[in-house]
Length: 287
Image (tube, rainbow, N blue to C red; front, side, top):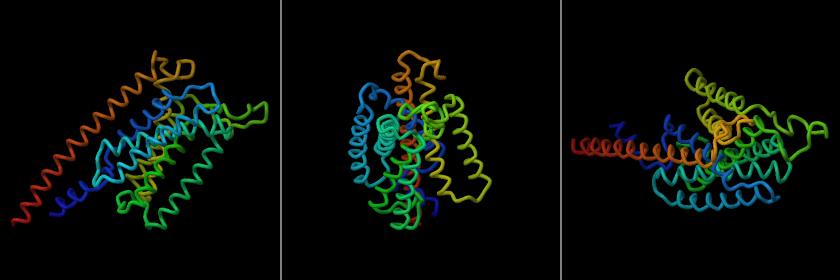
């Protein structure tokens, strides 16, 4: 009886279960955010990074409104909001670095501070940061704002690893590695972020570290991993990428296809579990 009730309870939750499929979809969505943002961000004008950010924030606001009004988890709505936060995060990170000239490190510190403030406010609103305990509209909004900021932070962190900032001076003119970024290869950036995610997974399996902390840490790190993987797909060979012709369009189409397939799998799986649980629950009530 408890199993049936748990499945029924999860079916009306607006947050998907944290399974392997969830993390595959998260990485696909964040990688698509990197490649998709590049489709509409064309260098050449001072406001070219602000305009895509404002556009994607508008998209985020529209789908967040829909998400707030649905009564249960709807995969297409949820992952569209996730994708919009990734697209907006990529554009805003580029705007902070290249248009405002903050550099990746300063931008990251600002975002870390902002995310900390959100978590503190969230904790005082409801004394838990566990995404399984989202029961009010206020906490749900905080959840999505935290995701937007964490995806922006993840973008800045990924760029810090594998890019040289265009918004600050060179080392010869007084810039520093912390301001410019480490300038690692795309492969090195992917290995570092992938290795950190693996360490989090090992910590989850073999330690008693706080699960909520591990979730948010992994959530942030999947963004730079997705960003470096996205760069690998779309950047020219001299910059460490595959150098495919029309790579941005091809990669975006493939990633969108993967995300759609995963959404279909998740929908079919959840519907099957819900139907079985409803049958079991009705049998229990009859007995």
